[in-house]
Image (tube, rainbow, N blue to C red):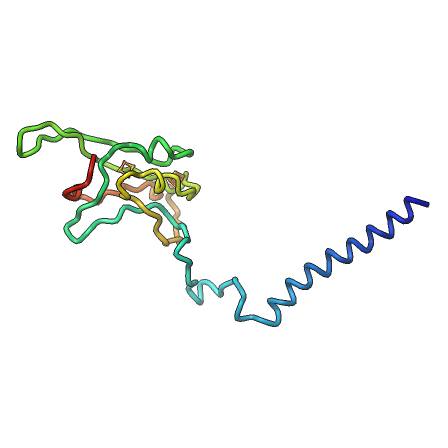
Length: 158
Ligand code: SF4
Ligand code: SF4
């Protein structure tokens, strides 16, 4: 007898779950302006500020960035998506100094977790909003984030 009651209760529970789902569907069916889906690619989506498409390194108008080459982002990346290659230079004062040579970013291995951005002590990297990354050659997903000929901005603490 108990099992029949359980069976009937489970039917009502199932109906309740179904109605909950239909309530959500019905809400969006009758308020289409609230829909979260976009008619991409016919209509380009309006992305939230928090959208993460790829890691980028902003440069200013003088082709300067804020990356010191400290390697903290490389250490903190859980996927090994970042490689920092440094080089030694001689400053005008004659001192030896380590600077970034290449900040290599493997987009194809990146889970867009944002840990590198959060851990960077000089805010040198951030999340870009580009999301159309489909390509035929996966080698193109490996990028050098510091631009050719770029250098570090004055006043960035190392
Ligand atoms: S977003 Fe995450 S996975 Fe991608 S490079 Fe940064 S730390 Fe690595
Ligand atoms: S991006 Fe930031 S954390 Fe990574 S090497 Fe450059 S300064 Fe260091």
